[in-house]
Length: 186
Image 1 (cartoon, one colour):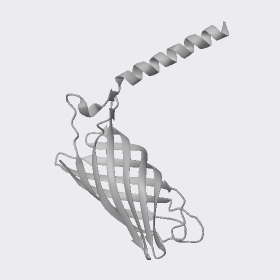
Image 2: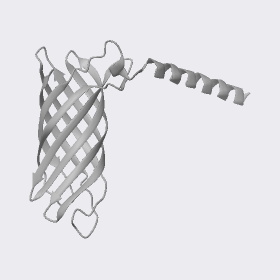
Image 3: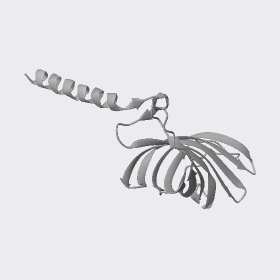
Image 4: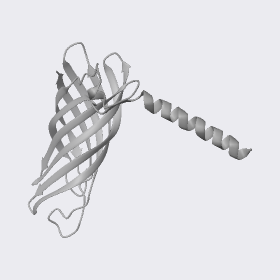
């Protein structure tokens, strides 16, 4: 009897999950009615790279758009492609990232969101150049008013791979950033 109840519960959960998955739009960019709604933004903020490096300013550019691969039945996923640069004390860190954020409109024009990301980080210091891959997690708030101007803010934590970065021992450039964004919706 227990096995039958567990089996019935499992089938019910699985069918509910399959039904929920069917409501998501796969390859959304190929569907009628898809609108990318691209936004180009300038970013500026504060970055703490840890490992005995100083906190300093970080700046960059970002292109965001409605994800062309996957869209949920309600709310949306915004794909954020960004480039950022930090420079302090002879250390330069550049990062190229892709960050999909699941965003929810909490009031007209105001959205909150969050999600994971992948990055490629290039580090240049007096000892040489190195590159590492990164994983990140971010949370954001966006405001789109009646004009095409866009305002946003984001907090992001980035975990990088280890490398020697020109030193005798391996270390990482794990970092956290707080960014303000000013953009234009196309």
